[in-house]
Structures are given as structure tokens and as C-alpha cells.
Amino acid sequence: MRFKTVQKAVFPKHNKSRTHNKAIERVDAPSIMVYPMSMHLGAPAKPVVAVGDKVKVGTLIGEGQGFISAHILSSVSGEVVSIEERDVLSGVYTCVIVKNDGEYIEEPPFPEAGDNVAPDMVPELIKRAGITGMGGATFPTNVKMIPPKDKKIDTIILNGAECEPYSTSDLRTMIEYADEIIEGVRVIDEGFNVDKIYIGIEDNAKEAGEALKKAAEGYDKVEVKVLEAKYPQGSEKQLIENCTGRQVPSGGLPSDIGCIVSNVGTFQMIYRAVRLGKPMVERVTTISGTPIADPKNLLVRLGTPIDDLIDVCGGFQEVPRKVLHGGPMMGKTIKDGAIPISKGTTHITFMTAEEVDEEERIDCIRCSECLNVCPVSLQPILISNAYERGDIEKAEELGAMDCIECGNCSFICPSKIPLLDNIRKSKAAIKQNAKAV
Ligand code: SF4
Ligand code: SF4
Image 1 (tube, helix red, strand yellow):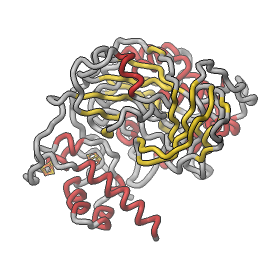
Image 2 (cartoon, helix red, strand yellow):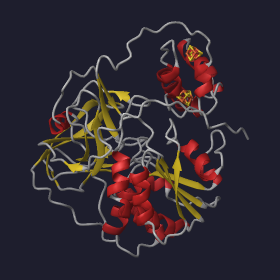
Image 3 (cartoon, rainbow, N blue to C red):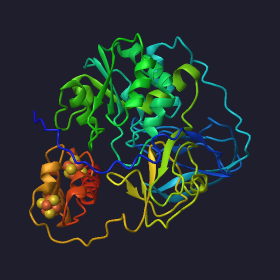
Image 4 (tube, rainbow, N blue to C red):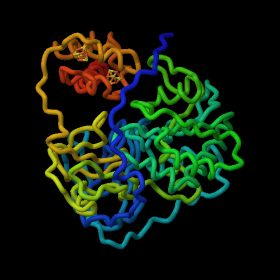
């Protein structure tokens, strides 16, 4: 079994001060809502509505397909006006377009929800609510919460280590919804009956730790772990090691070493689904960056186009050159403001021309910095080189699939080689090859 060292890090500027202390604000949904069937990791959902159908808040509009997939539920009431292919964040996918009637009429709560839900019903309610991880990876949560038959889970870890620059959505969720988060933990603990529950936060989020400690008073297995603010402190493997001292083996899962890890906001959604019978139809997202006049933490209905949030944040005080879904480390560049807020939208970052590093790529100077900062001990430049010469087998042999896509290598590279981009493309090609066999 090959173990990896997971303690390498970089220290990008946090850039969180403009939204750190701003309470979450709910925003009105616009008249046209866009629901891509690909808001999650895994197989896209399949539309189960037709043009002209009336929907309510919580109506199933896309049914998850297969084991790794998730349902999509309407976040507004209104009428389906189109079902069309659109270029959204992760490629071209079918989108259901709903005209919002502004009434927000809700479907009834799940009838099985309440204070005494049997543990084996919990994954079913999570699935029905369409919950995915809210830290960005969007793995379907019901799959994670099915107890494995062959392994004992003894530890739950809540990921509140919000290490991406600019994002304060987890911070504010922890401060303002601490009780709901802890109640969500109790729901999962009732099924797994773990020995220990850790909540990992960074040392720049101490108010969040205080709020969670207060909410968990008397719940003795809960421990708030205050960790150094460094990148990628919130990556799953790094967080597990820093909370428990255990290492996930290469190619392994947290459950292999007795752990379940999920984002803090995901536990809030679990509480709402299982105790209140509510679907996942909204999330907190931070809209930030120098060009934004009044950056904010917003409670946004899923499916709201990004363009509709800019005025809410005072518009632009400088012309943006680049827009990222996420932050500068792992974020994906967005070309179109019609792309909607999705289950994994932790934050949207706008950057000025000065902030966008536009230096030209030069040849590798063999400084080894990319190796030095890789938290999973890969050789990023070798994988990147393999990809660029079309040798996907070599990229795989070099461990491309172990890359956690933290972006450290691209951040540190003085030659501006698009290491993360090339590794992401290698991973996609490896998966494609595996499907073709
Ligand atoms: S993006 Fe991948 S290869 Fe680059 S430093 Fe992070 S884990 Fe290593
Ligand atoms: S950090 Fe950049 S320049 Fe340095 S070895 Fe890696 S790829 Fe080459």
C-alpha cells in the first residue's frame, strides 16, 4: 500500500476581509431560472418535466441516473418554458428553464421526515432532497452516507477549512447556522454511532469555531480543530490527517480509514432534509473580488444566473478581466454570466486586469517548486509534459488520478506552465480511455 505525504502547502493571500463580517443576505430570484442537469459529480440527471409543466419549489425536474448522480429540484414555482442544451460550467448539458412566478409555492415536506427517522431512511431522504457536497466537489451525499458493509466508520469530519481565497460562504454558514449544522451531524451520528466528530476550521475563522462549540455544548464527541490557515488545508486528505493523524492510502477513500468527511454546509442541508423534509434548493455563495463594489455573502436559489447577482453587490467599480467559478486556486474561468449558481458554487471571484497574471509561459527552469508544494507528492511537470506529448498512459503511470486539483503547482510555477489545466485534461483522457476499454 502506497502512502503519500500530505503536509505541503502554499500561502496565497486570503482576500476575505471584505466579506468576512458581512451577514448572509437572501436575494430574490430573477424571472428566468436555469437548471443544468449536471449540478453534481457523476452522471447527469434526466429531465422529468416537459415544456408547459407547472412546478413548485421542490418539484423534481431532473432525476439522478445511476449510483453516482443526484436529483435536481426546482427552487422556484412557475412554468417550464424550455428544455435546451447550454454551455454551462462543465460543458454542454441539458438545462431546464423555468419562468419564476414569484409565488414560491412549495411542495409538501417529505412525509417520512421528522425527529425520529430510522437511520436506514436517512440516505433515501438525502437522495430525495438532491443533496451533494457543498464544498465544490459536489459528490452525491446519499452515496457517502450509506454505511459500508465491510468497514467500520468511527469518525465524522466536518470540513470548515475554507482555504480558497475570497470565499467566506462556509465561514458565515458556520456562524449563522451552527445549530442546524450540529443537528445534521446528530442525524448522521445516529446511523454510524461514531467515536469522534471533528470540525476542522482554519485559524482565521475562530468566530465560527466558537459558534459551533456553543451549538455542540454537551455533545462530548465533538471537537473543533483549529488548523493553520494554509492552502490546501481544506483538501479532504490533508484535513483527515490533520484531524486524526491517519492517512488515506493512494487511490483509497476516507472510509478505508474509518472516516466520513463532508462540508459544513452539507450537514445543514442534511438537517433540513431529514428533520424538516426540505429539498436542497438554495445555498450560500460569496460574490467577491476587487471589481465588485459591495461584495457579499448571499443566500441564492439554485439556478440563479450569475449576471443577476452583480447589481445586488453594487455592480462593478472596476472592469473585470476574469471571472472564476470558485477562487484563484481551483476555480474555473467563466466566460458567460448566464451560467447559474449551482450546488457547488462556494463563491464567484471577479478579478481586475492587474490581478490576472498575464505573464507569458516560458520553458520549465527545473526549479522543482511544483514538486515541493504538491500535497500528494506528485511530479506535476512530468505529468504535464506527458499530457502535452499525448502520452496519457505515462500521465496515468505518474499518478495523475491521485491529483486533488488543489492548484498549488500552477500557483507556484515561475514559468507559468498550466500544470493544473494539463493534469485535469490528463485525468479526463484517462477516464475516457477507461470507458473505451
Ligand atoms: S494540482 Fe495536483 S499535481 Fe498540482 S500540486 Fe495540487 S495535487 Fe499536486
Ligand atoms: S515549478 Fe514550473 S518551472 Fe519549476 S520545475 Fe515545476 S514546471 Fe518547471
